[in-house]
Amino acid sequence: MTDTSVRIDGNTLRLPGGAAVRFVRTLRLPETGTHPLPPGLGEFPVRRVADHADTVPEAWRARGGVMLPVYLREAMWLSFAGTAEPAALQVGVGKVCAVSGRPWSDRLSREPQNYVVLPRQPWLDGINSGTGTVRQFVAVPLGLGATVEGQVTGEEVWGGVQLQAFRLNDRELALWREEERRRAESARRAAARSGGAFGAAMPMSAPPAPGAAPASPGAARARSAPAMGLGVGGSLRQEVYRDERPLTDWAEPPAGRVFVHLVTPPQWRRITGEAPPPSPVDRAAYTRAGLPWYDYYDQDAHDLAPTEPLQDVKPVGDWVGDDHEPWQVPAPHQVKPLGDAPGTPVEDGDW
Image (cartoon, rainbow, N blue to C red):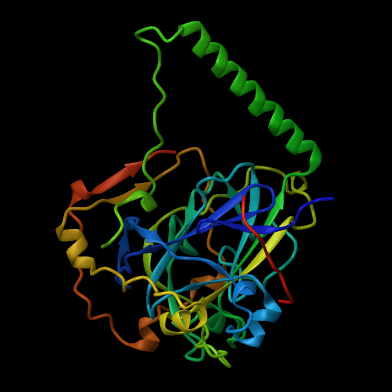
């Protein structure tokens, strides 16, 4: 029997087929201009909804999944480091596809593409908004019309983030595993031939992903919870890569899915009894400290063109006001180029 369970490993969601997803705190960018990739400032804590059935809203129990705390206008990105096997991952924001802008679907599509390919896509910082750019994910309450969901569909019902993973079909997965076995065998023979002598090639560590940057410094039943969704902020230089495989390489039924609820810090404390993370770090202070930003480019991959539903999404500042936090542009030397589970299963529900 195929295991379709989603599990939490630390703060990493592990979906069937080996897809790994972390939600990473980051600096919110100005809503004008195009910027390099901001650094990671630690992971959002992730908890199972089922573990707090007595304190979460009833609608959350019905949907199942997991939850994490976010501040108003806090930015995040999704890291896919640690993905074990090739996977096609759909990312929804309020059940609007963050890649195509189309309604949520339980099937993969190519025209337009409604998924990212792991591990080729190392991370996703926002919605696909233009050639070589994305618009940053920024948390905002439902009800203002500021979410991607509200702007694309005209209503705000779901909020949160939705993830759905697809495996390679049996034939393609067997071919991939055989190729990986051959590569591992070739590497073993090369190491044996060198015999550990001086001059042998030393393994090189992968370039640091943005998330590797230094991190910044019994409740009553919750009858309702301030629902949060994702809007957009500033523009970042990031490509959303086109899948080079035929669509038929992917198994048709989804391997697993999970609904990620976004909760305000006060409600997080009431639901879980845990202190939420500290408020996001001041952007100017981070830049003044000389800490790194990132620029990533893969010359062998092809970027997806933006789709019409996402091109006209407005930033959250249009609803909640101008951003008065000071902005200090990083110096050129701060922008670093980057090269090319255990636990109880998460319960899924109706959504």
